[in-house]
Length: 582
Ligand code: GTP
Ligand code: MG
Image (tube, rainbow, N blue to C red; front, side, top):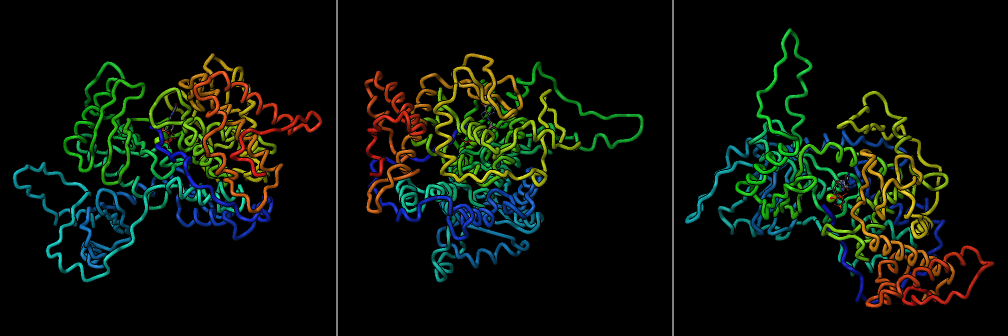
């Protein structure tokens, strides 16, 4: 369930920074016309975070967004089209079944169209006129879904019209492109907002994610009528980047529970069910049959793996048409609650997402995170660290979870498996922060904060928004916000944590150096965030010579201290010349 990420930015040509006169940063915060403002506008128009404008428009609750998107996905279909398809004729043809609200094309293994009808009945009408293909020598397993093939009756008919319809991009920018964009930005704030704008999920990609869940739900419903397949994790928590995996869970606990309390009279009806000896076995059995079903009959589902002995059993597969790597679990209500909490944090203040995206990108560029599970920090843990850091600012940029709990009303009350998951769901009742610190400062302070954090004795805790004594000896302890006895970063090894600390110190040092050196406009060096994404010198000098690593980190720490306290200033003779601006 981890992200595949940005490639490293090594071997890229250096590019020139823009005039440094534009760089000093305070002017950026509220200037219309800056990339920061553009990013905000763009986000609002794309709807990718589903919120209103930061200050004025009411922001939607997570549950409202989920409900709207789910309903939208149920009226939507996916079609594999021939390349020559004429958009106009295609839309005209489909409109026979009812008005179309929205559509777009994208390229995956072929040309696909996503078409959203205004009414659900249009889908049924189209399905009634759709045939099962005859396969010649192979045999087709008939399966009636909302994933179609479009065939041309007469291909010469179609070519006469506009040859190329616009295709929506579903991938993040290449490392080279990103690097150019960052070097072209006007300030570090601008760089962070640019990175966010380029990597965040687009409106179309978000639609495709909900549609994919909805298509999987149709398949699961063959076994469990009334079930729901719900997305969670970064696809919905406002921190998703183009290319991230699609985490979904099969919700079976909703079946038959909604109206049961409405029955009157002396009796209560229950479904006859089969019992098994534990919840875990029930989960494994359910996922096992769904995995078989996806493998045998699921259109577009390939590479199905049943990973049933994991701590959290899951079925992993690729949805070939959308290009998503999917992880399907069951009844994962706490994870959905985590997603809602992150959505609230990501939506409260525009700096949160900019920080999280940049820190995740930085971590990926330095191989601190990986798509393979192991002793690495996960994106989820990094997000918690950013939230914690923002709670520690003065005044705080983000409220603590305990505070969000005090704002909750009766309908927000939520206990899952004995864990109190209560917090306010109406974002509009949370006071915006009075803190106006620019992103540049926050980025530098983030690296300083964690470069000097007492990981050996303290735990990170977003519930209380302050350090706690570590309850156990794992190198990194980040308290699970709801299952509070659990550590979400238990997997992280001492050496991985040390690597994180070294890189954080080095990055803080680079930013300090840039601030100090007042680089010349003709400087041909990568700067700001772009410089932070380059391979680390500490790493390359220590490569193969482990003993050097610690002194490099210590040296950077001392340098940072001397910068903060000029009276003790030593000669700052930075060795990481690739990133200094002088
Ligand atoms: P990406 O790397 O972009 O996929 O981020 P993600 O937040 O989706 O992470 P991932 O796919 O690894 O996990 C999906 C969701 O599962 C997270 O958002 C969390 O809600 C939850 N999750 C992941 N790891 C942990 C963990 O260690 N403990 C707990 N309690 N939940 C986790
Ligand atoms: Mg994920």
